[in-house]
Image (cartoon, rainbow, N blue to C red; front, side, top):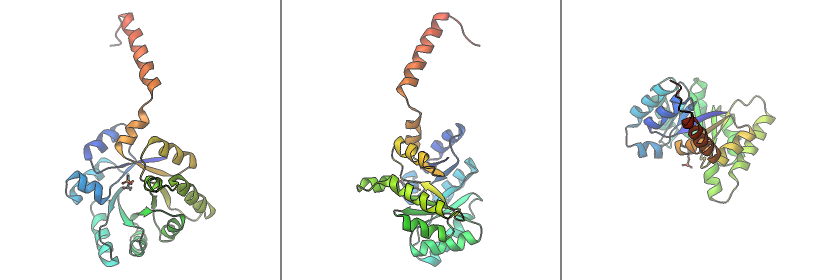
Length: 218
Ligand code: E4P
């Protein structure tokens, strides 16, 4: 399973990349706003940190301007993946950009039918939002299962399921059990994945015993 990091904070991406945990990055207008930086500048910096896809989202809502924004964003770096919303204009833009070989992530997916449309439009990635569905008492992980089942019925579909709006480690583990190709994770969730109390107590015991030997390795 590929791990994308869901943030526009360059320092977070850099340290996770150094641990080999970054296969790509997703941003959205809210994350860019939170970074307080110019979008083109921050996307260029992120693209230099990872060879994997870096999603940069358009903000226009009409086809012509959305396509122009997508064409601008893809010039920032070869690994930019243009992110478009799951609207008719978004799907038209997806179709036009992917026909040129541009990576496209179709975002804000909340139903299997929407995911099927994105695949037909040539999306590289479909981003179903599990956490936001859970928030309104729908089963977000069931959406992932449904999309994967549908896509697997049609082997010509190459669109990858990019599980988004992940809020905690159980989301990630369930998505991996279902075989989703990609998960995008906030840095805090990646750090939660590391944690286990038996790792902490086991390490403390090993180190205490080691100190008793009076040895040092170097
Ligand atoms: C994915 O690309 C989105 O940026 C993100 O996962 C949304 O997550 P949220 O619902 O926690 O805002």
